Image (cartoon, rainbow, N blue to C red; front, side, top):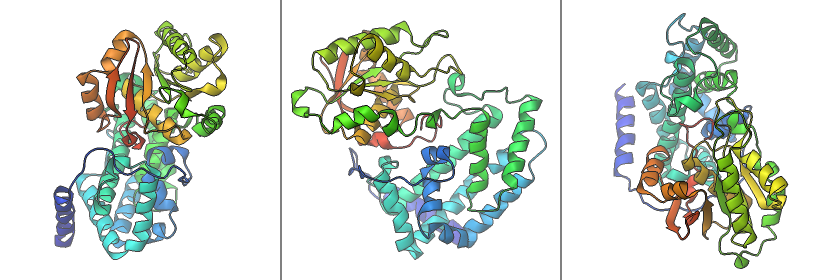
Amino acid sequence: MHYLKNCFLTGLLLLVLWPCTFGQPASPDLHYKFHKGTSALQDRIFYLFTLMEQVPGLSRLLGNDSALSALGNEYQQRVAHPVSSGDLTASLQFSARSSAEVNAALLDLLQRHPKEVGRLLNEMRSSGMFQLYADKTDATLLSLAWKDAADGVNYILNAYTNGKGLRYPVIDSATYYVWSPAYRSMIQQVMIQAAEKKAGLFFQPSLDVALALLELNHRDEAIRYEPLSATNEAAYKMVKQTDWRKYPYTAMLILGASPVATEPLSETGRSRCRTGAELYRKGMAPFIIVSGGHVRPVGTRYSEAVEMRKYLVNELKIPAAAVMVDPYARHTTTNVRNAIRIMWQSGIPVDKRMMCVSDIMHVAYVNSPMFTKRCTTELGYMPAADVKQTDLYFLSFLPDLRSLQVNVFDPLDP
């Protein structure tokens, strides 16, 4: 126990003492090839765990560690013997104690096996999915990434077992009434199925149940349109042929607007598209990115972005190869963040300014301290740098590559 306590305290001290730099860190690898695990949802939300399973030699190293192996066996037993009532998944959440044990073990492995753990860290840095911590030391990056992953698993277990802790309970909640006997019974079945799996790495029992809860509630929004390179294939091809010197801006983001009823696209969304189409025809930007997911009404089968693209192409006659969709964003914060991700992934230059188009009040909001504060609170950073408003209906900004960072507290659009 003294050894564990000392390791944990040392890790915390390093996190405090090591310097933190501000602004954008070094860019990730644009040509990075992502690993694929057994679950697309896991790859999208918990890429750290996918890397731990897939990076050569790392799974064996983690599995042979006595502290992590003991913790994994403990959690496997908890899955196999769930409580009969109350909080069915509370014992599967990573407590402060267990999280500290994992942190200490990972830092110890980094010290004793720098080559093997170094492969993991190289993958993390190259992927961009940990970009918020890209300017940190290896030890700090590993600790912060583990904390995020543990918090993300806990968030899902709590939200989709008890309906608690959701940032946006109205639109992100479970599909079923979580306290109904039928739903509690389904959760127990999920845990029984998880218990039947062969014991593996320390995080897998809790992770398996968390992912199963998302699937049970049909909350697979995060992967419905993957890969986006295929969804936006025509536009991605056009990027390679574009002469950026001809345009004031690299891309135009049109912000989505949820319908109030069951219509595929709201009138506000149509109006914003018409504004964007007019600016596109003036040659302001070679590409339009429409952004908005399956948000309202809850359970809708329509993605705002997909319907906006249809309207732009079919009704407003914008070339299909000029329109990219972000079919995931659920808030204005993630509209901006996801558009930057698409720019990076498609090869659009991120060192030049892009546009953001909406109605007058919405544009003013994006250009306000209130929006900056919300982004900082919910994302940990402001995705749009050097915001400038030159028109009532649009503003421009420089993309911040910290937007590539995965947000574990938004599993429907991480």
